[in-house]
Length: 181
Length: 181
DNA sequence: GTCTATACACCGATAGAC
DNA sequence: GTCTATCGGTGTATAGAC
Image (tube, rainbow over all chains, first blue to last red):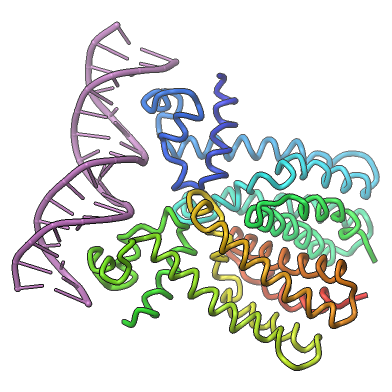
């Protein structure tokens, strides 16, 4: 297994169990390596593994969600593409948001800055597209906030109810909600 | 400190650190008792403490959010009261939702049933008011889902961004969103 | 680069004095 | 009813053989 594959497996562990619940035993099993071997690749231990996961997830998010927003088409088309890819990014509601997970408990102190930055980038990128679509910047920012809130909210609800049907509906309605009126 | 006061303190620990992160050391400190003393009041240990917290929080939620919805006034007034009290219940975005916390990691297996039930009750109670307000039941249910999604989403965002201003806006707009069109 | 063995702290939980 | 002391287990992390 490549290092990147291992990090992708780690991501699932952190998302599922949280930072405290992501024990070295679980991470070791997910990577198919002994606990001691993990320290060869991540000398600073669990914290460095979480950093690698955060970097990896940010990279995926950049490709799937941010780049489509910065593409060439009409604003409406870009927003549609973003919404589709959000579905893929969160595996249609099966995955929790890593950022929201890392904003809890002890992890909050460790990852406060990058988590804030990631949300701010999403907010600003989406608001930028809405400004292009004709909204003034305050209204664009509110709508971008509302969209992110809907995504985060439906992820929580999907996890709590063990059901992804509401996720599908919310993602499908996201473009219309962003551009209506 | 009364048992109920201790349970309220426990709730803050579970909300802040999650089920795994809510260690007996932290719970003991929050209650102002030694670890061993906790077992006098909660013989089955941490799991029983979390059960007590869940029961306590459900009770608060019942009083603050559900009962106003089942009151006597017009639907619009009841929804307005619910929204106000949601602000109080979540301390205006400073608190995470205990249900969403208990739907993660190992706690998910332990508390799946009551968490699902609590969300279902909220959904059905709110949808009932919207039916009274004139929506057909499918539309009422969708709107109730959307409102709960907005609340959960803004709680995540508030926690991640360490800011409660968006929370205030979303709660304020909640009644209009539920009843518009 | 991966392993076994181990160190030491903290976990949840219990025994028993007071 | 609360405490100190302690248990067995697991947590993160390290040492050193191969």
